[in-house]
Image: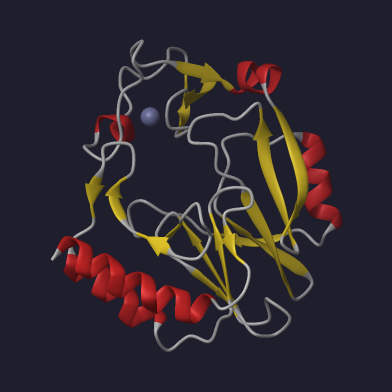
Length: 208
Ligand SMILES: [Zn+2]
């Protein structure tokens, strides 16, 4: 029996002798099937072709895969009490990475996205000014001064206004000065509360 991982999106599947026949994430209208067709790797193949790297990303420890795999996001470890919250997931775990996380105090829980989209408010982040870890629920733009929203990134389907207003209303009461996005360096270092509000206004104006 093998543990299978989708080569296009990184979703993991229960162990089975043969790979899955399809990936429901890739077949969803928000994702896509790889141009060469659906492909799956065993955990051993994944570990042979990629390694995990840990490095600082604006004051938090990030863990990502090299070379980049699937959508290329990195996970963040947020200090919390005696351990860490692991924010966002990556499709590979190695003994070395597990030992590294354990040395930082271990994990308390994990966060996820896609169905049941979630953002994490790290109140003690950004030197006590608060930080928001958004994954790709609010995507930090390349100029790192705004966030934006999409229903599907690879297929360029914008998120509707009602959903964006709902996100804005949830975030509005939270105090934060920094936003950590889903990829290495894709963060808004400071002034993120105002940047978030300006981003929502800009987005809603753009799709009006
Ligand atoms: Zn997939």
